[in-house]
Length: 240
Length: 290
Ligand SMILES: Nc1ncnc2c1ncn2[C@@H]1O[C@H](COP(=O)(O)OP(=O)(O)OP(=O)(O)O)[C@@H](O)[C@H]1O
Ligand SMILES: [Mg+2]
Image: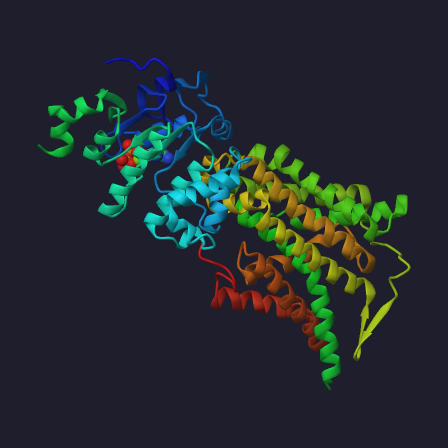
């Protein structure tokens, strides 16, 4: 496969896990500037583990993670956020006791503070629903609204690379459509995105390249359009 | 026998005493809300702050009210350092360790205080100690009125800080969603230390407000902390509003208990409230399910 030449994110030989359990056994993965890369894999394959190690929530066992050319493996999460690598996590993780506005403003706690007002306007233009609920406690939002808030909070920090962990989880089909359209638009503005998804067809449609993660290893990778035709992948994820 | 005038005076006195209780309880509930532990060193640190106020007065002649900003700042710094240097460092991120470390700290502090300050009761003589304000039939000591007003003011300032400032919002974010906080780049460990520092700063303020009308011995802190703990449980663990409302309820209960049952038995009312709240509404008046 053609290796992208200039990479925002470059993961090589990454090993990680929990305690003595190794979940990721040598991952090589890259995201180029302006690219959408899809990361596919069944439940428990280690996708979220990969994201959380990239973002500094856990310390990897070994291997390298380069972001914009500098090694960030094992750096504290605040430094990684500062550099512009932002994750919208699985399960949203919004601040339930804070208002929608405060959630969004905290999105620029470490990065993007000077342009906070302008970014808030931009995020509210993307998610008008949040605009109507600025004073509402985030914990009382519907699941879909919380997902919008989580993405909006991520955008508040002017990401250079956005990791989305199952952004369509729990959304109605119409909202899933909107979500993928949004991902395309954000990327159209130049944002690099690493997209973790269960919606294989839609992910491969929007992504440039994709990786398949199984049992802590990358088993398949290539152009999204090629993978969409791959018989192995079709069999294991689409059942035909 | 129970003249409404006397009861009125009792309620007012209780209300005034409640002010400082609120401060002590707000510190306790803040630390609980963020770190999810009871700070067992709370009473010992209050006692330490009271000695700091006492020695500032004795050695340098600084009036307790004048010392207020200094003691608040010093207590914050001390709390912050204590968290960074001891509690956070040795807890390895486990709540039960933090609990034991604060318990250990309290034992150490108490004994160090006994060693250096002795067991004698120390008091401060300020010229305004004997002044009273007359409201209806009630004669209220001026220092108690000052401590009440200052406690409320400080709690209001803290409330504004928690709701308006980025750091205040970050503290509340960390309290409920640590992982989410890390993902927006909040330095969670530092927020822990700041929260602990603010909790101890509340004690510094309480010490300045107490000393003009109270005394200090190496065990003075404990009585306050038992009361503060009751307040926190009554109001709901981690709830600010709960600590404020609970503080006044307990203050009044104590005053009326003292009135009807005498100084010695007056505390029974507090224990009664504690037991009742555990039986009827264990989450407290303003508590949410954890
Ligand atoms: N905090 C943790 N402690 C211990 N084991 C964990 C922890 N988090 C995840 N695991 C384990 O690591 C493995 C990979 O989990 P991970 O969450 O990375 O999977 P995933 O690919 O994101 O799955 P899903 O699609 O269901 O979200 C699983 O076996 C899981 O049980
Ligand atoms: Mg996952």
